[in-house]
Image (cartoon, rainbow, N blue to C red):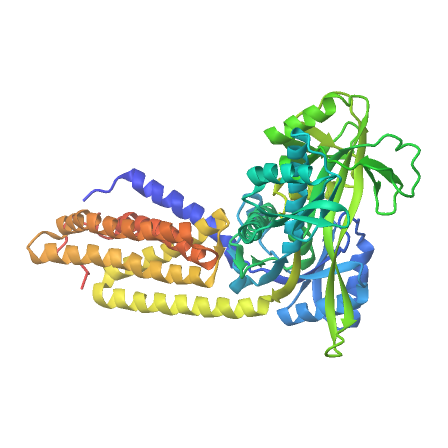
Length: 625
């Protein structure tokens, strides 16, 4: 009964690295509070950390190892209860200019971190995190669609030489005015052919003369709403990927709401700033006479916007945009020749062509980059019907020019944005553009933070269930299979270590369903050993010698074990493909456990049996029950 030396080497190497990368999980995260500035890009100083520590000391809250790095301060606490008290104390002490967020600080030794060994990420139900409910502004989605439709209507009418006396945008459509009924009828026939699927068209006569009322039909409004929600879902997922949050849940709720769950994220201000920003860019030509414009009413066909900050000097721009942010396919940060932050922009083919056409006749002129961010102002008003105070959300837009430069050559699909205030502003702008534009603004209507204390309770329950399951299996295997049962239990323990190591390396989040997957894997791994051991018993009962029975037991049980695990592995892949959130966590754990259990139940168990019996010249009886 020989066992190849290379298999021993393989087992030793796998177990060594598994133990090494599973080791960080013995160093649990500590509760901590993180202090950052409310405004993005604002530099924090160590004085803030000193002030925070003094406030905690006066409040009698125990803390240790306060650190300052990456423009944020981190103070570690002794317990989750102290963490919650510290957040309340520091929020009052530091004021509204700083964000105090719950966090978890790693305690992994530096030598493990240097080789890329980190503890497993925990899901929302275990580690805690944040849960947001966002509401999509459907009215704004319709208005944005109408803005594009207006351009198409003007283009179609201009191509057929149909003059429009006036155009007025309504909530769900547009009203066109004409000099006479013949022009109106001609326009109606033309637009009925080109845009009749989207609009209901109705002839009318009002105070301004013959008019054509175009209103979105019910099917178009439904399509706009669905597109806005689906596009925002995609954009949010892209932004979450940029944030590096694993096992996040992003799904629609009802007709116009989106639920976002971010496990492990305690800095709610940063998450809200990145997820909720409806940032977009417009590239516009600087209008003639901009140098002499100092304020007041802009000339026809132009608009004025502040430069740099919201109270900066006005810049006069042409009303028509060359390209908007939805044409951006990539955005990366860097430094220009003077060491200042910049963002390199790449447009799609359509955007590159528009930019090329616009700048071909504008070499020597100036082009500006307009930054548009839709926000919502919360105010409290008294409801005249109930007499109670209610929150009123008023949408508004912050618009400013962030860059203005002369066009030195014809631009195409790639160019740079300079003139940004800081590296942080450049990084955030690149992230928002790279992850895609929102189809419509979104506003936070619900925010919930799940603290680490609840997660700790779930972890304890999950670990207890795993321990109980393992101990019952451990006892069963020893009672029924004696020494072979001990070998199976050793392989089972190694199996759990390998699962933990793989999940730590892959960065997969462990959730309560994931723990259920580990418990299920324990049972499946033992099932493989049971098949092998029962086969060995059958061979011995048939009069086969012990060593030959061991070889036959492992060889003949392999096909059954392999088939059973492959079918379960296929189910895990299906769950991962169609599931979301916790379901994916269960599928990942199950798939890893299946592969690991095949390794330990077949290779490791066989090696341990070889060590126990392989060197003996003669074996009269096997300790297998």
